[in-house]
Image: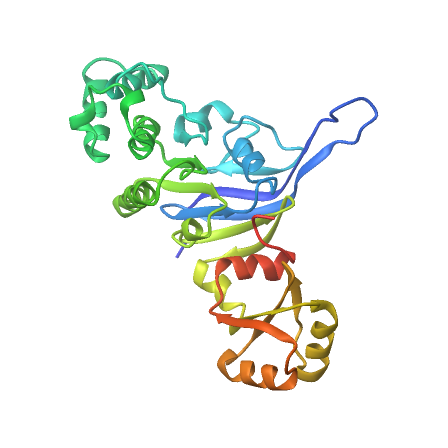
Length: 315
C-alpha cells in the first residue's frame, strides 16, 4: 500500500547571512530530513533556537533553503512557491487578526486575499464559523475575545480557502490549559474529517504527546523521529533521579558498582534503569548518608530529549 506524503523534507539546510562584515553565517538547519503523511498531525518539538521557526518559514516558502529540498504535496518549494501557497493554511505564532474588526470581517478580508467573492465566500465563511463554533460570536470585535477564541478565529481564517496542509507555529502560545484543550479538540476534528494535514511547531511536551508523530529538533538537526510512544519506549525502563551534595564523584561510583550510565542534570544524578523500584533500595544501601533525596518516574518525551541532547528542552 502506497502512503501519500503531504510534506517531504530531504537533507534541508539553511544559514542566515552574517550579521556584520567579517562574521560567519549562522547555520540554523543542518541536513534535516523527515516526511509527513497525508492526514496526520505531525509535530516539530524543540527549544527556542533549535531551528523550528526557520524550518516553518522554509515550508511556508518565506525562505529558500541553502541546500537540500522541501516538497508540499509533491511540489518543490523552490520552483512552485505560488502554487504551494494556495494549498497552505498558516497560523503564525504572532497574532494576525485586526483587533478593531469583527470576527466575520477578519475572515471576510482574508478570503479577499485568496480571490474569493460573492456567494461562494459567504458560504465558506458560514462553514468555517460553524466548524469552529464561532457563528454566535461573528459580530463581536476581536479585541473583546479571549486568547482561545482568537486562536479559533486564526484557524477559521487559515481553513477558509480549504488548504490541504495546515501549518501552525507554536499554536498554544498564550493560551490557558482550557483553551489549549479546546484547540486540540479542533485539530483532532480536522484530522478525523480527513481533509487536511497538520504540521505544528511546539516546545511543550504535553502538546507534543498529542501528535501522531514527532521530529525532535536540536541545534538545527533531527535527533529523534517517531510516534510519542515509540520515542518514549526507547528509554527502556524507569528514570531515577538522585539529589546529593556533590554529584560528580557519586555518579562515577554508581557507574562502577552497577554498570549503568548516570548523567548529571541540574545538579542531580539521572539514571535510566529497568525495575527502578528494585534499584532504589540497592542504591540507598550502597551509599548510606550520601543521598539527600531520590525519586523515580516513568519516562516522558522530555527524558527522550535529555537522552539525545544531554539537557532539558527549556535550557
